[in-house]
Length: 111
Image (cartoon, rainbow, N blue to C red; front, side, top):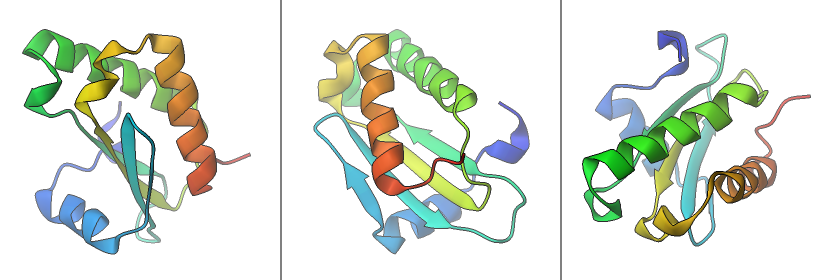
């Protein structure tokens, strides 16, 4: 993903979490907020060490980045996806369906 689509600063991630606008299910938590400073959406991703070893964590990150890449989001949102350790048992199709449901629930998908 291009740099303009990433949130890298810890302060910005903490502001998203502090905002308390969140949706979730048993596998993922999605923090989001409206942001008018940037012309496009931005996102961050967190996979905890409890999830598995480095190979499993990196594989989950690659899968989620691919799902985010093919979606069309509203341009004025920032969001932060936290993966729960229970998501280790999911296949790619299940991950995609669960994340899309969260995006719809949060109303951050574009047309």
